[in-house]
Image (cartoon, rainbow, N blue to C red):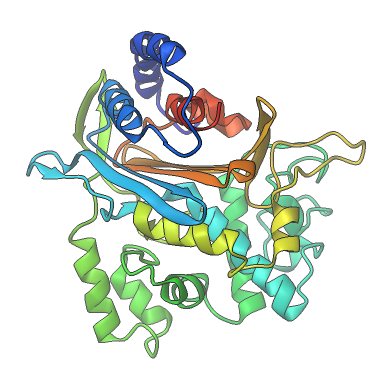
Length: 362
């Protein structure tokens, strides 16, 4: 599971504490399309942050393909009383999957790569003989491939050598070159382990680049673990980057990524539409995922989203409402943005997502 029992207890407390918030939202006026209630969102978001025991939270909202609002709440380093900001870097956990899916999409468009190829070409970890790249992208490779959904970051990580092969470059270098550099994501890093990054491609990750990365790392949000509603300093997981996790970014940089995605800069509109459409079983039953993204319908609106969970260290949420051309991006330095049940495919189990949808979409 993604969260410990104590964190689940904290989340239950958060739900109880949010009853007043829900009542207030029920009385809140429906926002006018031209006047989004940022002050109200800021206030309630900070209340949720405190209830969840999250020391630091950064948030951005993108609408109409431009960054319209961002801020930091709480502390990125509680001991030093350093405030969280919109340019505070965090480990983004499972949001890394979106980057891997984009790179594979570029392989499809630019090199004729087929996601129907068997995973056995690249990995022996996935035993199902019929498992294909597309099944892993949809978290549908377990059992009878394509017939059932089961979230498994370990299986998704097996796409790393697939990316390495189809691009003829290591995954972290591809992301750094083709996405971070291209989009001007200057506070985003292909991992924490600078020595390993430099060894990946010395001619690309030269001393000047590594020094710039090191400067960003000095501002990396401090990780915290939450027990009984109290946050204590945690530990980051072992260094390393795969298709399933390990990238570092900020909400402001992720807003650049989101805008480029909607502007068809990274992949074409047709391929993006496929990625944002629910995969179906052979019997036509929809699964909760597209290709690298979760896709669901809520109150008649299609939601496209992804979450990240870094045990005892951080959490992340990126939620898009395509018909409204609006995106929410949240990064935190402890778990708490969503309960572990979010992996079942329903983003509304997150009170943070629910607050956003009530104020900006409902």
